[in-house]
Image 1 (cartoon, rainbow, N blue to C red):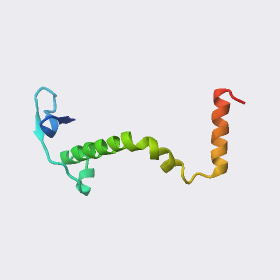
Image 2: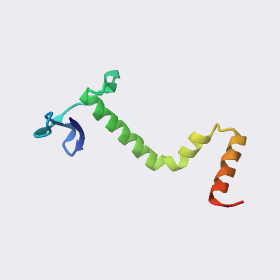
Image 3: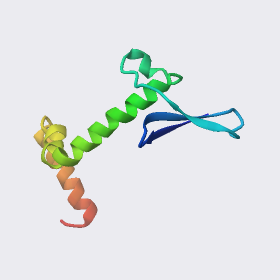
Length: 94
């Protein structure tokens, strides 16, 4: 069983025995290539957590400004009106 671990001492993975009785923090380096998508490669778990941290951090500063525009930029105007009408119907404003 493996539990992901990000700590003060760098990226690592908590690796325990099959019974969960003993364990240790095993230091691993991130795997950024295609082998990182293999669920049994420990470096893939670390690289995904690092990439997610960058995405979440970037969204905190720039998300409010650009996220809505990026998602709904190419939406059909008629569909947008239907979504808006449905939202008003749901909250009880006619």
